[in-house]
Image (cartoon, rainbow, N blue to C red):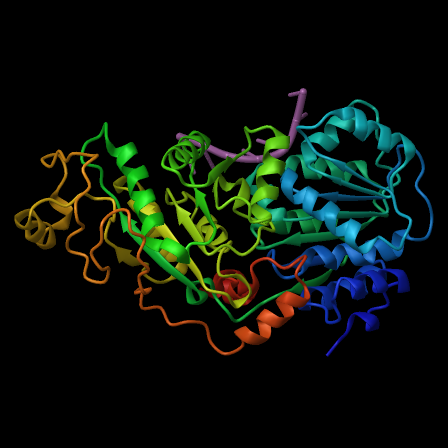
Length: 479
DNA sequence: AAAAAAC
């Protein structure tokens, strides 16, 4: 098996890698580092969690160790779609460049220009940036990109989703065409293919395809939710969420609750807190210091539940969480895969529960189409059950209890008609055996777990790379 | 329809 010391990395970089505890590169690292060191363009098709970040930081540090940056003329540039990702990449540089004299600047929004300007003026070897802030600096005349030797585009497909492609194209055009380009994307949409054809020169293409799939390592469930009345649906949905959290009990050690909209992130987080659940919101409207602090608290295990918009769905290197709960079904089916990919990492157990309101059913269909399987239905634990009479009624026609059933929202009643779940008072958090009927992952996972551990800093999704992402182009076209 | 990202 290839080892890091066979990849021609500089001794100082190698030392930092070894000190971080790694000896065996991941496939994307083994594939991308040698051509990157030779100065070739690289097209990496890989998901977060494959060791992607180190596959460009390590060769970059090796190459940049020689030479020095001039004022306002950075020698390399890494573009990331979100501020958090950019910060993560910066940390990765710190880890591996500790034995090398290398200056770097993190150019992201939400923080003052002042410090960033100061760094740029002094000259930086590595610029890590989100597109908006980078262009902002450029337009203020503070920055010249004509000295860029290496440019990295990270998470290009997400850049596409976020409408950054024009910015990326502009930035490409501001850098010298002699630059080396390292380009990473989880998928290859036609638009991404076009960009790579335009801006990459004879790239070495590294595609990471893995066997394991999301659907096999994550225990997935969906709760079909229906509010009793329009004006109560919102609060009832939050109650359903609380009940889900209660029912998971101690198995839920930490979780991310995803909402589709920022307002809901705020409302849900506030609601959970009100009911004594340790939760905090994160989304793009919160100021950067709050975002950073919240995320850090969550990483440190000081915060139990992170209520998040899709800012946290992809790429973020949060620790493996025990649960992902979708307060809403994401409207892009692929986001579902990214969201649930925050759990069950490195071969550990993971559980994903999605709340599906009637208006989300179309989205749920799309998700199931993408997964090519049905997600196990769970009864709504938040639905107050009435008398035994209604109970059998509900069993016969669970769907039918809408307008007519104006149910007292505060009353706690015993849950009925839940075959798998033991009956319990609402306050008890009794563990329930996962009943989704999904078989666990196959062999291999132990092995993976080990190498994921080896590569803790950069590994994200671990074992359960979703099958559609793991497929090669040919397979994808075929299906 | 929303989120992310620039002030």
